[in-house]
Length: 240
Image: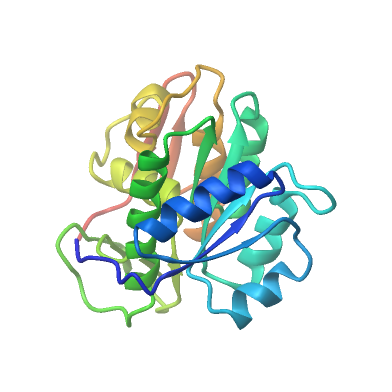
């Protein structure tokens, strides 16, 4: 992995002054350019105008909440989005992933862990802005599709491309890496989460739904990702 240039611009959206100041100070000491705000007014315009690379977005904001802002940002931008949530916000985390957030952290969090997540996401966001190339290591071709692991790009047979959020990419690559094999929800949760998860976490099902839409699969009769009821999911596409 190449180093992320310290010119990367991070925006911290947090209404709690102490938390915002802590994060700003921490990332500035690591050499990043940091902006901060306590409110969400004109966030989409701010991201575009100031060329923001990554947004750390608190879900519980006054006025527009973080989920609404995630949807608005993802509709017009490929900016990296890390949601900051409370420990009991399981539903919010799932909805956040469904709306296009790349990752989430729960309060209280370890600043060092957040830094690692931010670095990884910045690398993928910036690398994904480069033109797509032919198959790279850790890439898969199947029935005219290409999953480019170096850029997290899913490229359709008509060459339309979509940069997958981290959870979607990890889930699809786990399934493709075991073609014809049923993977349980527990196995898939382990594959997509390098964090703690609870047995009632339904994020796998949410991400499966999003992947099926991006793969143009009919949810009532899917071709690529099949449901093994009571067991898990299986990739049924033909690898090239």
